[in-house]
Image (cartoon, rainbow, N blue to C red; front, side, top):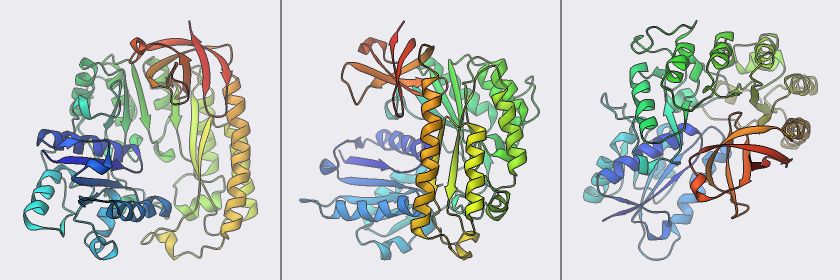
Length: 441
């Protein structure tokens, strides 16, 4: 039996793809292993959103090639594979096959080709019409949490972003198939599903099958209500595009207890000039109206975001406006990145005129503000009781369990293995830099 080591970089969509790849490999009789040194095949599922993530591929292939003993077959999947295609064989010595983002369902065919015909196989074709989006229980990243893709690709073409080129145009899965998957996951003991996609609230299925009878001003808000009606205990969604985020989404959360208290709404900049240059399709003013609606909700919805600092042409004044938006929005968490030029994007042709040193300075300054906001947010939980899905043993203490609250906060608390997979009430006693600590009540 061939042994396969599968490594994944990047977003939840990549993790979700890897779960289906693992399911397909296991069905073919291959053994998934956690020890790379024992593997006959090493598969790397790549990310290309930022230069640093792409550089990981070059480093990892080099490390695998240098290992002692029999050299494994090396396959590269995901966004870098889709963008680079067969040129990867010339760029990185040692790669045996390449699979694009929509070809991962044919991983077994690729392995058979390489084992019979030798290296150099590439498949960048379209996804099969009968592609199976389900994941075997044994191959999910968690026994109690599952990722459910609802939309793939992106039509927005923000000037800095490579995703429309690596993932293709937006394609929404049928609502009836999504509901079927959620019901099956619920039957199998899953407590929390994450509806995922590059822009989940841009969801536009080709038919309304599965959404009949559910109110809502957009297909996405109707889908949220339909998924909530399955009765699964928790539903989260990620990532939302600001232009397509409307008040009806907040209303759906307010009407359904199992829709969680968390919205991830990437703003990317607090300057209208930079937002226009990024082609984000929203303004600071329109974004603030959405923030106001979220903050006005009695559900106490936690708000998180993504930010890019040092975009071409970003002045000190532009950056200060971003700082001001942070203070206004009071983000629970923010993922801050220094601008990284990506070939073939419109921004790549812009002059990268913010120096690396200045990008670092702005990054650290914004991080300082965010740490203050995050600490304030976390301290607000002390003395409160929150519901936590116990997902795993804490990496920091063998006597503690770790899980997420409905607002997607990491919570650690003393508990037994018998609690794993259960939702428990935890009274928060302590707030640390990035997580909460408490006791079961």
